[in-house]
Length: 398
Image 1 (cartoon, rainbow, N blue to C red):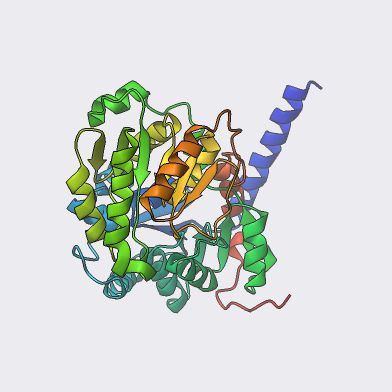
Image 2 (image 1 turned 120 degrees about the vertical axis):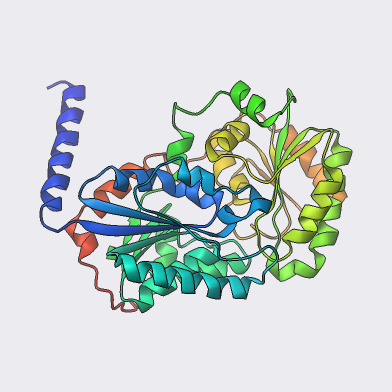
């Protein structure tokens, strides 16, 4: 048999196995919770896989930054997918304290899930919405699946991520390192599936818009540019205004062009937005949000990425784009060879920009996966073992 025929046969056998497994349980209701454009970009391929399967019933709760005009009202990105069961709920007003937002979200999600009565709640990452969804699932005795647990960052986000993992019953992680870390936290090895980072599936897609189309849509007239994303660090909230001023001064003094995206809505974001608005115009174009697929095209074609977003640590290296990582927000993340670290001073940032621009022919990083997460997720969620996890968790000692 030719190699191509053997591969086709193996894929057919895998599909037959999945279908036979599906006959062993009734249709399942699955809730996905999304609070930001970023987490939706990571989850949407998984959501589509569920939506298109008659053996599952997808319900999508959209809240958080999606529902805020300040951050671009990105709930519209969810609307475009035309899911059958959508729930759009605002969980905060601009500037509301994070602890208050957490309480609001738990209350809202608990009421919705009480009515839906889902078999599974899927959450992502380290945002408050994920913590709220996992809390509701645990207290309502529903299975919770956490996507991209077991990772470190060095800020309060890390505390949230690990808390979500302890509330979750099933884990979809990016790599072996994340799996090992979850096992150190007492999680059962059988509950952990290595699928990679789901947004890499979209990054690999041949259906992304052209750079010309993206530039036209967002009015970007730069030939060359860098992508800037600078978020607040909640444990350094009192200094974020000072840090933001030094950061944007460095961008101005670099002489480079920048596509700058608003920060997330964590405490300290107000000061950053104020500083960004003061420098916007000319060589710095600012946007509350950019559609995920369009953002990926800008990222892929950028000279470099700068700021403290995880996109500079995860997505940019996958495209072989250098990153200037500023400050402490990502200090405990895996750092590939394409990443240059800077402190909060303008001098350090400017020096690091030059180092990043001197980097050439960076090999794409596969640390966070190969771009086949949806397929691995599909196989896992259609197995009988996935649904046989008990809702009463047990700590597993090493």
